[in-house]
Image (cartoon, rainbow, N blue to C red; front, top):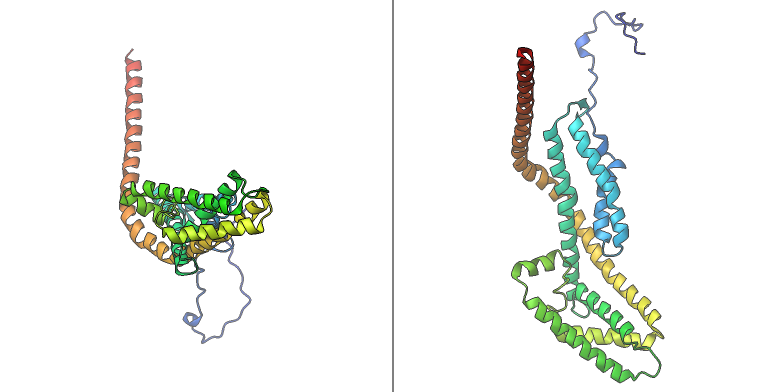
Length: 311
């Protein structure tokens, strides 16, 4: 129970006769700090960035990282709807504004820059070693894995030279098939594939045929020379694919971190300024429509009551 009293509190502190009360320092008001912007709670809003970056390495685990992030986004939007700072003042326009900010700054743009970072690091790989992109190497290793299991190349009695020749011929057919399919795609599809789709279609056909075939032949030869059975070969290839994916994940982390602050500023000072007037218009239209519906319903009730009285 809260007890209110009008009795003034007694002060036991003495005051010098000539002391000017205006010289007494005033107590500064504490600036409101949004609890959702303080750590460690704020860290929940970045867990989806981790999910985006590790999606190549562990897709199932990456999806789990989205759960705390989405919970944080929902709590933040609801808090902005209900409160203005530390004051209770519900406002749907403020909630929509925050929803736009979270959708762009925390979901859409990090996903875009994460995939662009993977693609960039994949192309950086062309500057070293075999002069091939990480995506081209990964897809080649996947082909080696499937070919090794399908044709049982590690069985005893297999002729090594014949096995290597058959592999090379099959790989050449794969390259030509990818090249033919990729040529049919338009410029926009190719651009999307390169920047955001991890070069799913273009990694092999855009690579140098001779360099890629030599890489495939070298890696396949290593499997023939060092692996005793298909299961061992599978584990060896999976480890190599994991390292290639880890390199691309590093690219995603790098891009997301570098783009975080510019994205926040862009959304806050460009996107939200453009969207706010539209949101205000939508809120006003919704409010006016709701008010008109209530007025129409009230008028209908009044008319029904009047007709009943006449009867």
